[in-house]
Amino acid sequence: MKKLALAAAIVVSQALALSAFAQEAKRADVKAETASAVKAGAIPKGEAGAKEAPVKSTKARPDVKKDTAAATKAGAIEKGEAKAPEMTEKAKSTKARADVKKEAADATKAGTIPKGEASK
Image 1 (cartoon, one colour):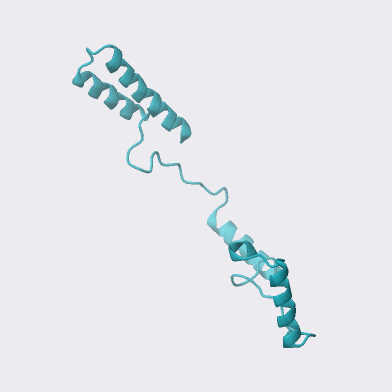
Image 2 (cartoon, rainbow, N blue to C red; image 1 turned 90 degrees about the horizontal axis):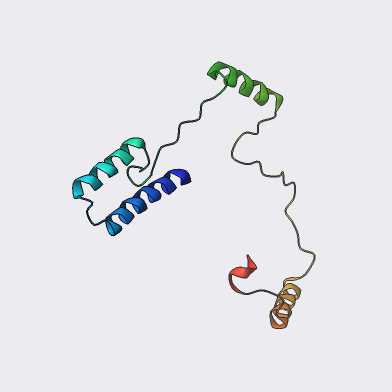
């Protein structure tokens, strides 16, 4: 992709250089040069540029399905988006609410708690 953009930039710069130094370049010459660059693939079409070739699999679909089924049966593939750890009990605090509030206020006054997005 970068090579293609570089080649297009070179072609355009050469066309501009020729027209700047040799003012005799006609519109038809420039159009012909641009058309040949497009035909050669030096100038990509549209905003996306040149398309890349799709990736081909090295295995047949039945082989992939068989491998996936075997991995699922062996337990190597987890089900769902993510497995949450099993929680047996709710976490309980060992401090009273007033103590926690006091510690937080002291830490805020001391400046040990970052403010804003830095705390994330």
